View 1 (cartoon, rainbow, N blue to C red):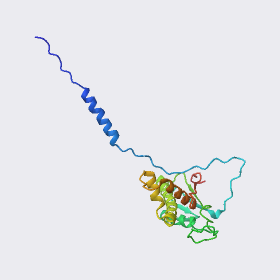
View 2: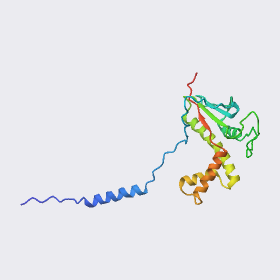
View 3: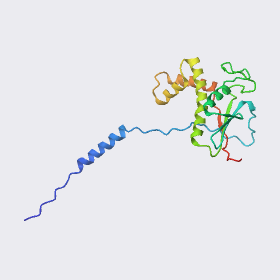
View 4: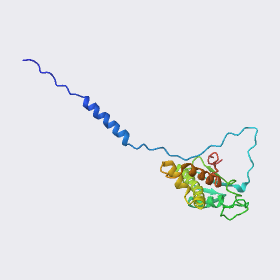
Amino acid sequence: MGRRATPEVNAGSMADIAFLLLIFFLVTTTIEKDKGIARQLPPEQPENIDPPKLKEKNIFIVNVNKSDQLLVEDNLMNIIDLRLAAIEFLDNGGDGSCTFCKGKRDPASSDNPDKAIISVQNDRETSYKTYIQVQNELVAAYSFLRDRESQRLYGWKFTEVKRALGEGSYLGNKDAAQEKMKTIQDLFPMKLSEAEPKTAGQ
């Protein structure tokens, strides 16, 4: 009696199915983009040029120690109060040149938004959570003022249009919107610097 031939499985159709499944997952899967804190480094300055002299009143100093405590302008402050303090500093208009500022015009505080600088210094042992919270509050201060001015000038919020342009869902004239956004950014330029972190005890 002869040996029976072993039946072979046709794997051709299985390969086709696997290929179709691969295409399906590639098309339907949403790949999340990494998000971070947007910062633009200052251009490199030639060694033979002295850095510009800044008035101390135009610098808003935020120190964060290793215990995640905030020292703002030499005063202890809760992080929930940081945004309002930054808004008051940026919107002060102390020299009277800012016609759109609504601050106290305190001569001891910042002259105008173009000269106002926020300087953040963290301890090397500052927690990442607090670091992000501080950055978020300071950026939110700029966003509040930019929203206020874009609402006054154009009837829409800066942050909403910026988000729509980034997502590709803006339905209006994109070039005109970007030009108007540039105008708002010039009114309240984000001058947020980070000093080199210190080690506790320094």
